[in-house]
Amino acid sequence: MAAMPGVTIVVLNWNGLTDTLACLESLSHLDYPSYEVVVVDNGSSDGSAAQIRSRFLREGSLVTLIENDENMGFTGGNNIGLRRALEGGRGALSDESTARRLLDEPAAYALLLNNDTEVAPDFLRLLVEAAEADPSVGVAGPTIYYYDRPRVIWSIGGEIDQRRGRTRMSGLDMRDDGQFGQEVQDVDFVTGCAMLVRREAMENVGLLDERFFAYYEEAEWCVRMRQAGWRVVHVPRAHVWHKISPSARADSPLVHYYMTRNRLLFLRVTGAGGRAWLHTLLGEYLRTLVSWSVRPKWRGKRLQRKMMVRAIGDALRGDWGRFPAP
Image 1: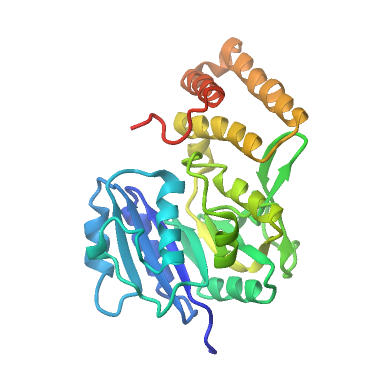
Image 2: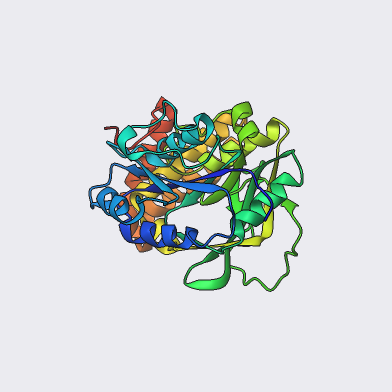
C-alpha cells in the first residue's frame, strides 16, 4: 500500500481493563500502514495501567501509555491524547517514562475510539481515504453497530434538532440492510465513540470543551467544526462494534445528571434560540420532573429526579466539569 498519513488513535481507559485489552487486540489487525495507539488511563484503580504496560508496551509495539493521576472525564482524558497527536508527544504527557513516539512525524489525523469497541481491519483505511478525498472534511465517522447485535445500528452519525434543542443518533436500532447506501454522507455530528479528526481542523477550532466532562461534547465539537466551514461526514463502509447497554446507561443517575446538565451547556455554547430553551426546560425537563414526582409508577426514579434537579441547578449556576467536583 502507498504511504498514507499518520494517525494517532486515542483510546481512553477508566477501570475497563477487559474491554480495553480486547479493543487493543482488535486494533492490532488493522490493514492501515501508518498509525500509533495512545492509551490514556484516566486514574484507574483496577490495575489497568500495569496490565496494559505488561501486555502491549513491548519492543515493536504500536501502543504507548499515558497515565493520569485522576479521572479527567471523556473530555480531559481525550484532550491529553489529542495534544499528543498535535504536538508529537511534547509537553502533554503526565508520565514521560511510559510514553514513546511511534510515528516518524506528528499525526495528520487523530482518531478517538471508545475502549469498549472492536473494529473491522479496514475501518481506519476507509475513514482516512474518505477524508483524503476532500480536504474540507474535518471529521469522519464509521457505521457503529451493537456488539451483541452485529447487524443492528447504534449510530451512523447524528442529527441536531435546532427547534427543540435535541440531538439524536441516526439509524438507531435499525437493522442494516444497505438502506443507507455506501457513499459518504454529511451529518450534523459524529459520536465520540469513533471519530477521525483532521489536524488542521483541530488547530482551527480547538479541542474538546472540558466543561462537559462527558456527554454532548462531541456534538458541540462538530457544531464548531461545521461553523468554521469543515465537513462532518459518515463513512458507511467503515465498521465498528460497540459494547454498549442503552438500558444500563438510561438507568444510571450519574449519566442522567450529565445528560441533563450538558444539554443546557450545549444550548448555551451553540447559541440555541429561545424556542429550543423553552422546549427543553418546560416541554421536557419540567414535564419529566412533574411526572416522576406524582405518578406512582415512577417511584423508582427518585434518585434520577434528585440528580436532574441538581443538574439544572448546577447549569444555572455555571457549575460544569466533574460531578461531584474533586
